[in-house]
Image 1 (cartoon, rainbow, N blue to C red):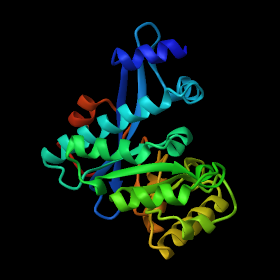
Image 2: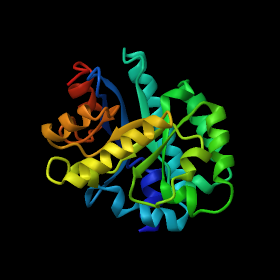
Image 3: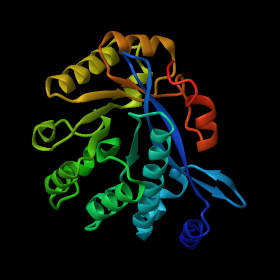
Image 4: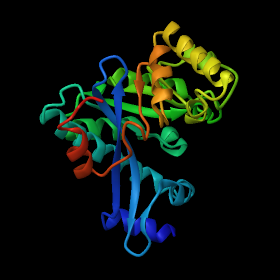
Length: 254
């Protein structure tokens, strides 16, 4: 499998799909999350769960991650030039990438190669990457922030009870985990948790994204609570570039 993944990178079998992100106030398209897929010649389209863990163990995640950053930045700039002036793209970092010594250089090369403004790139990391990885996460985040890149905490609320990193690290965005979004409208404690996350984020000057929005009731509750952005199947599934353009570029609001 590791050899196959290496061939996939060499043979350009990797793809990025893009899931749209909408502003909850203006209801306009503001960006997308780039999600990696493998177009396997025999097994068809593979999700990241089927090959990313192996790529992390083998070290292939570093060149794969660099490819994803370059491709996402290039595509975001293409859409900005096509008229989506404020469009930004979010790219997930793995723990291995986050600890890699060349991360800042890789990010800078992707931005410069695409001529994309740094503030149009959002790097998504998890809570555990800030707490578990050792080294100097604060130094890495500070360097990325100095470069102008925005940083978000993915799957917020599912990791650790300590929230001190929100004060210590230069984070711009927190993403409400889909497990909380899924229970909105059905479980009162989910609403309480979502309300608390939004309030906490805003009190610290952070923007809040809800992921996994699948029903109009969830969207309405999130809007009522002041959530800033939303993404999920209700608003749009992850799509390859041509389908994303056909579906969302002409119609930029929901």
